[in-house]
Image 1 (cartoon, rainbow, N blue to C red):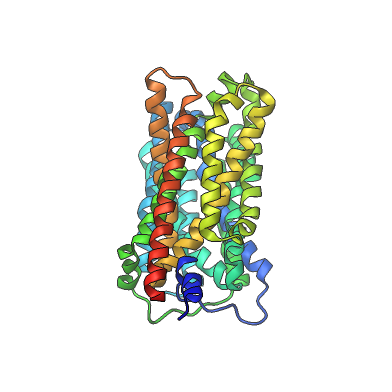
Image 2: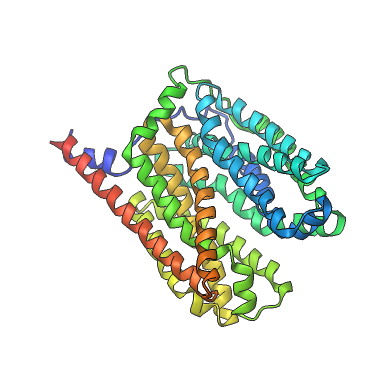
Length: 414
């Protein structure tokens, strides 16, 4: 093996065993649309709760801070469900797993709509979160298998685009539905979307036979690989900075930029447009080199978060900052997802699912760190400043990952 070949196969993302390609006759666009539709439903239910906390609190007779635990219940379901399901379903046909994940997702959301009290709602939201990470993880593996190797990040980004579009269309519509008809109806709406997704996956996603060589033990081997943990660390630390800022986007925009409360939904649409643009552009950025693209994205995030506070003091620059806050991290997500599949080798499904557990941990970490600086009397400029340090930490972990990959490539070349 030449040094050039070693660098291509190992340093440029340690290529894993390749999943079977789609059979002839598969309509790539429809297959990716089916997967993206599931992402749209998941994105809608994940974010709509945050906009309906007062209605939920009134509906089940609790305070608004207590209603915030409903969000945490869903996030906990994601963290628990992603690695558990991906590991246990290692040998099952992936298309069948995707369908059953949507069945469980539909049941959790319909259960949320019918919940008569707080405890039942908490359980239903936990159940709704269980399929989240596994669907994105296994769906990403399926999406990547439908295209050539150099287009994998693009295919993954097209699936994740469903989640980003949810922030433009699904969340505002579901919020409007909840405000006018009751907090239960958005969850019923998402349950209907899940049923439509089941039909779309059944019709359009090609059948992928079970991998007889796969097993839970092989999936868990991914956790022995340092590059898997380093990539997960990049997501946790790097994205923690974004969530430290986004968690307090409403008071930041109203207190610093002077926007009225009624303008906040429009700003969230701007954020969603940025997310969608980032997901669409991620494939082109990855084409420049996976690690290079991750470096560039994290550095850009760090610069944005450093400038976010000053930009938030003027309405025009605040809108630009919100758009970029959606765009830049969304460039990174598909690259993290693809790299995890590469460095995990036989544990692709588990590693890809863990990416979404990681992002939910980053959500909790960023929100908590933001609350710490605010509770010490610092202004709304400070969560983003703290977030810039977290993004720089992500750059450092990426550097370590690149050095380890180069050392591995040199050892193989020797």
